[in-house]
Length: 295
Ligand SMILES: C[S@@+](CC[C@H](N)C(=O)[O-])C[C@H]1O[C@@H](n2cnc3c(N)ncnc32)[C@H](O)[C@@H]1O
Image 1 (tube, rainbow, N blue to C red):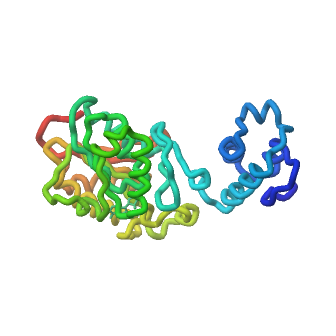
Image 2 (image 1 turned 90 degrees about the vertical axis):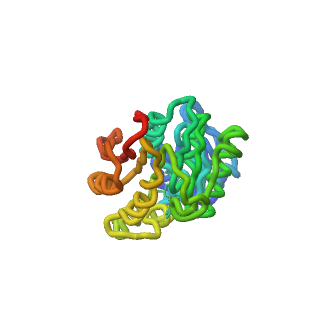
């Protein structure tokens, strides 16, 4: 195989670039589409089409980043979540499709036309908060993160993706440590959601995830079982649920039983987990007793 096209030799066809780029086919097709304006159909119809030199240069740089292990979302600068194109960068976790389970849970609990106070803890790119605000016009959504850079990106995403009224008014952003970030210590909620850091501090997968922020993966309360941040989050969040309100958390594939135990220890009822499409326990939830059942 000829060397990957890191420089920009003249006269490289789309088909030759695809053949020689040493990338997964899906990644290579995404780069061709985004950086050279070549669709899959265009490629099939005319693989001999020559790439423009500047497109070839962009493709070479992007391909080198991918081969070094950087996520495609950082290379492209965006990732789709709940049908919304979120800007992402190394200051935030790349939103994962399985986190859409948390949004599905929220939409089930939030009636379409009712006002409700919703909190997204550890918002990162804003994925969960923005998706919920997008789907539930009357929800008052607040979001917290310990990273100022993440919050900046999240609020930029909201401004681009939501109507001015939603992005500016009904969504609020707070910098700090879980619920301590909120101005009022007595503020309570109808629904609290979180995809918190849950990777164990010695987890072997951290090497493959090295481009994403450690604060997002492991958190500042690093623990071998990955539950350091979740323990603190449940302790802070459970007392801030209104009667009948739900707390729902994403967690690791083997953490379901431990998270259910934490939710029960926090005094919540109807504690249960939900599985993702692969059959893995992916989120766990519990509600404060009393009030109307929201489900
Ligand atoms: C796993 S990422 C989730 C990001 C986003 N919600 C998503 O699903 O793509 C966890 C987020 O929690 C934030 N975080 C970590 N520790 C925190 C803390 N103690 N208080 C608030 N946010 C925290 C991180 O900065 C990161 O953005």
